[in-house]
Length: 304
Ligand code: ACO
Image (cartoon, helix red, strand yellow):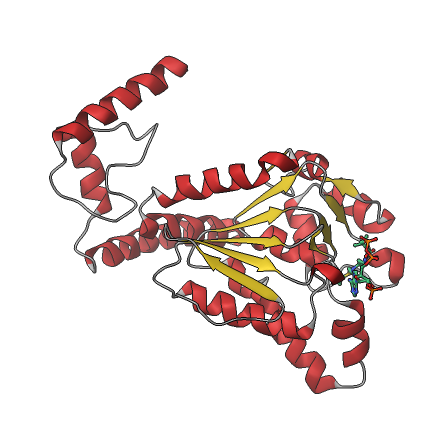
């Protein structure tokens, strides 16, 4: 449990393992200052090993998700002070190096303005859910720099080259629906359902075996730029790591998942994870659970 208080960020931990990290400089539209980055580096490092945190949701207080780097504190006030600039730059890598291969699932809930450097943690979060009316902008071209800190590279890797070029060079703002259409975010929803839909996804992820989820996330990220043969080897090794991590807590998701489907007939993998996956628990399945699972599988089949 992270109990420390921070000046630029609010951390709220729910009992179910969902931790909310809220950028909390609404009066500055959550622009990212050196202090903000120092705090975020500390928070994200701590949450990665915090046993009470299974999923992290990033969002912003007020009307902005994040107005990007703080033009005054991050840029102007560190000019002429290479030490301070280097420190701010190093701490700002919580958004890229740390988030990209984070051990736990992360969701960016984009509630409003998402500008410049904020694209980094939008893209490096595993999932991004935007309000339909959120405002995205690569504003760099409008005030005199290119989208640096890897934003240009991330944009051209994530959206089509046409969209990357158009929005980076024109600086034109676009909304959450447009961000979803170009696959910059996972999906967008009306503002009134933003929190509900974000929690729905988070709770769904909580039902999965967390070791399998971690391995799957890493597999999708790491194989992106790998040669075919290297990727094949990586995936075999990663599956072995899942087995080892499961074994450390007396579990075997692979055996358990097959057993419950083939022998117990208590769930259908197409519609849900095996019973106990979220807690990483195996063992006898109660008859009531068996009945419940058969019912929900039937229901899901009928819906189709
Ligand atoms: N850096 C520093 N201060 C900022 C930033 C920022 N990125 N964004 C907003 N603020 C400050 C404003 O200076 C203002 O401060 P003040 O009250 O002391 O005058 C306060 O936040 C509120 O800003 P407003 O502009 O009044 O808010 P409004 O809601 O009208 O507009 C908007 C919001 C559109 C986000 C506007 O503030 C804006 O264009 N901000 C700049 C965004 C930007 O270009 N960021 C840099 C991206 S590039 C990069 O990250 C590398």
